[in-house]
Length: 337
Image 1 (cartoon, rainbow, N blue to C red):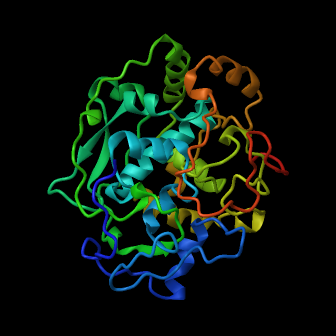
Image 2 (spheres, one colour):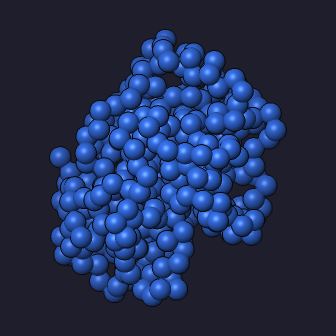
């Protein structure tokens, strides 16, 4: 059960820096369009006063990292299992989850699963304790060398001021918390994958040996305008191009200009150049890999590749434009990029 939530107490957050239409421009580049024309980015203010479900607190760094509503089952499973609320996470925690999710779908060929994530990562509290941004994920020591290199920025300056309102479901884990995250037994529980995951680990080892990094995974989903932690009817390996409805914004006009792309990479990863986010020629995303069918066939034996029944607690206040009810049912056109 989620711990205490702050209904009207804004003391856990500083005043917002997103308080006029000029400031709202960047959040709107990441937040998905509404199917009903409802305003998705509502300006922040000096003291947060959520009015669930009409307006909920959300953070620009979370959206930039790859978390936008409606939230994926994997993301909600993580919150539930570790007894966390969304705002307990740091931006780097969201980055870790998003990179893992896209790595699974676009490069390995399985859907992200809590079991596989737990095998690689544990939860760590920040020091001193903090209500907002109170925990992050760190790799388990024994398996550190079996995951791709993933260097995240050391500090997000004043990120807690980059909040705004957005419509979210009235779900306890999406409310603003009133207490720091408290460690529970699940944070350190051991995980046994079983031999059915050997194919996943073998493919991951191959990707690592080819030089795949977390920065490259981030660059791939940023270029395609895919939010890895958004609930979608189809997996990332089915991406077809600019008109694909799995994108947060459809159409080539929403593709990032080179200079804008560089600015986002610098802001999110703190890199001086966007080159580190580019894939080497020998690594092909599954959406354009000619061997995709054979790779996915091998991965069918992995439990993480199975579709889950929806829970409904995903932050969705409405169905997004173009969302389809079943895997493979999304309308899409264009060519893979």
